[in-house]
Length: 105
Image 1: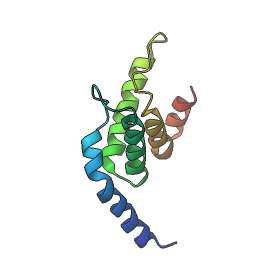
Image 2: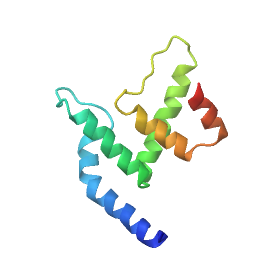
Image 3: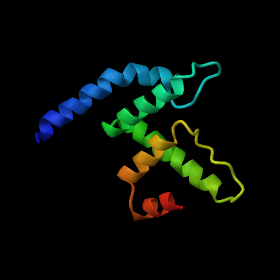
Image 4: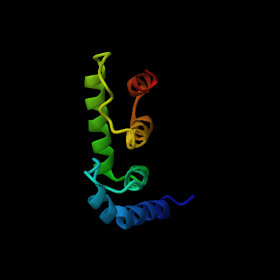
């Protein structure tokens, strides 16, 4: 394992996917194709796993918004189902014990 090469690899992946990331963004658009949500989820996941800070920060913001709304037991989860996995992945990877407890519930 060579951390220096792995860091270069992660930067390469982020550079490779950045243009697609900018086009897709986080939220669905009206009339987008049926495969676009799957592509969005894949791109966001790869960006997060490879350390793209903007993606990680946005996932954390959306998770905090979810927690605020979920305090009301009748609330509907505001996170789009197609990107929930990305958000939960980021929180599980970068979270602490409190985050773990929040994810369990």
